[in-house]
Image 1: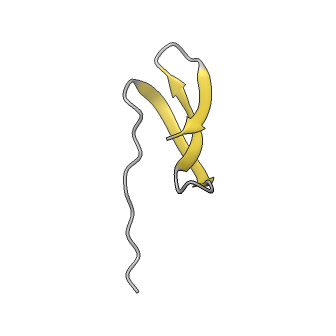
Image 2: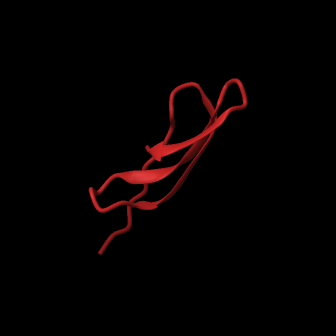
Length: 43
């Protein structure tokens, strides 16, 4: 079975991290916006 990767890039973010997949199948993680504010959400 081949392994595939995707790029996760929140628009305007300086850093994006994916940590897992929730029960709805969404990638969840956090990101830092251009102002330096960190937020967590489904990505």
